[in-house]
Length: 286
Length: 279
Image (cartoon, rainbow over all chains, first blue to last red; front, side, top):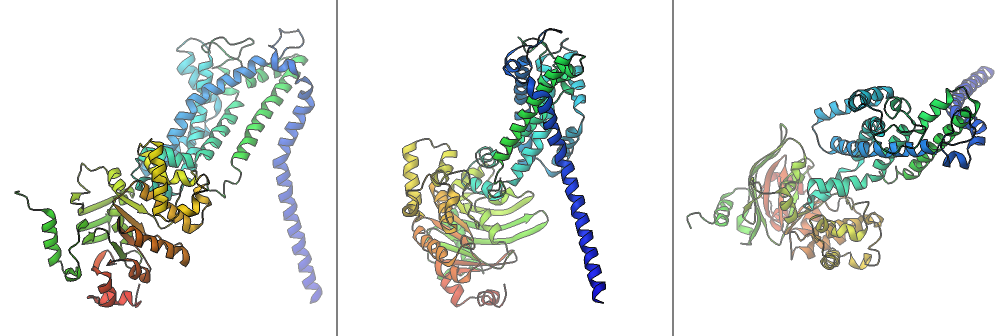
């Protein structure tokens, strides 16, 4: 009798151990890619990340050295263009969903935003190619920025809506009961209370489009030199990495690794900032 | 002179109203005259044909079991119920003789004249104590810093909070204790200089000591304001109010001087509720 019970106990322990092991391995599989990516990038790219990389233009084929300063600056320019389109439309759209609109219209809008979030990013490139590049007969920074901005809009709409809905109704009522108008209540009370969450959503959207390559292929196009006008093709870090990685030259491969390391580090830093911003968010509501 | 004085007509009708105990009412000026007020949320009728006068510079308490329409009623006095979609109102509410529901009345103006304090204290979490008090004035366009500072101190003094927070005005409003937060909300409501203060169960989330402070404050404030308060606490209604209205399932069962309602109610239901037989 006693031994039978002990057997059962052992078997339970074995099952429990198995389950924890499987869960632990799954968790490792989640973390492993990030570690591997970083490790690989460091091994292959760290040696090529130097002062020249951040300050020099690419050299002609065959000439050693050079850097990617035009691509780094180009990426920042494209992000600025994308932000001027994506942030106002996304934030205002999210506030509309959270504060105005009937339940039926909102569920339709929410569904559309979710579908747009699932659209492959190259599609956005094709759409902007058709709308802008063909019409104005040329690749341009504007077209690239628009493609990235369009990707940001549904991302920011959804995050803004979520944090606006988290603001307790008591604050809206308190402001309205003071005779404050609806839009002032939304701007000064609701959006101010939700500001950390809104900024977090914006940063995550920027980090997401900062690494996008496909939408830039037929919009920004890439450029081996400085871009002197936003209506001309412009270099971007992911595009430059793509061009260099598929080239046959060892020197370019090393630079592609370095570019990837810089890009991933940049996105990593944005995510760290987001973590800091959202620290203790559950404690203070938003 | 063709149109009769609306106040006189109201008073005359009030006298024939069976639910009111006009004999015990002094002939005090009225702040609100509510006539045949009904409210629907969608299909559900929350308030059913309520006629009631609210006397100036007095405390009127609304009592009754949960879901009887107390909160809906006071929210009709500053049009806050309109925030709930699909709300419909029938009847008239006169504030100093003016129809609150007339089409040319801006609800924001109504709310500036009729302030409100909520059940759960709700100071704005992103603002300091000082900012919380003057935010109503600021968002209504007041820029004069001298005037704002003056209102800040005056409102906090009226809310009996000045001595406790005068050195901490830059600290977040949410750093105060529950009772202090509720008094901060009262100060915030007073800062915009309303004529009336509505209180929706202002003490229900507070401990007895904080409650006593708010009750004391209500007693002080009625010299300058008309106060309408909703309460679940019968003893509280007895202590602080001059008039009491008993609501039951959306209907006004009895309304009159608090002393009469609590010592000699005319309606059986009122007596049953006050003595704790139901509710």
